[in-house]
Length: 153
Image 1 (cartoon, rainbow, N blue to C red):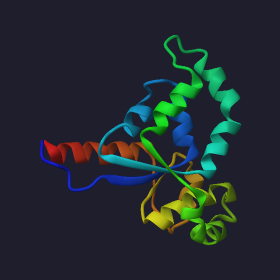
Image 2: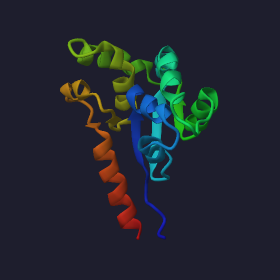
Image 3: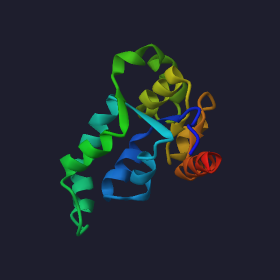
Image 4: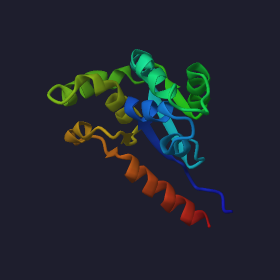
């Protein structure tokens, strides 16, 4: 297989991480593990994940073959680069302004995407209302990965 020129860099929204945590081996979790994606996640988002812990646990308890929540989170975050807030803080005000009439809670994800110059991976349609950073759905990311893998053949 030819060596890939570059990976696709993406900022994952919390909904992507949550989806991956709901079920071990889920499609989104497997996508996150592909070697052609470099996933970034703002440190701010860790608090959002923690706020949804009881919901995640309730969904995970229904699965017969499950890892503990903490093990699953640790394993998943091995494929994600958690970026400290101070590394994108210079773009937070700009992102907050862009998101003020949409959903200011998503400002950190947009700020990180602006700082890195890459798209946001999110299944929240409202994030696409801002036009400064590209937003890719899981279907879009699946197509990107498929195209990259086809190039490598």
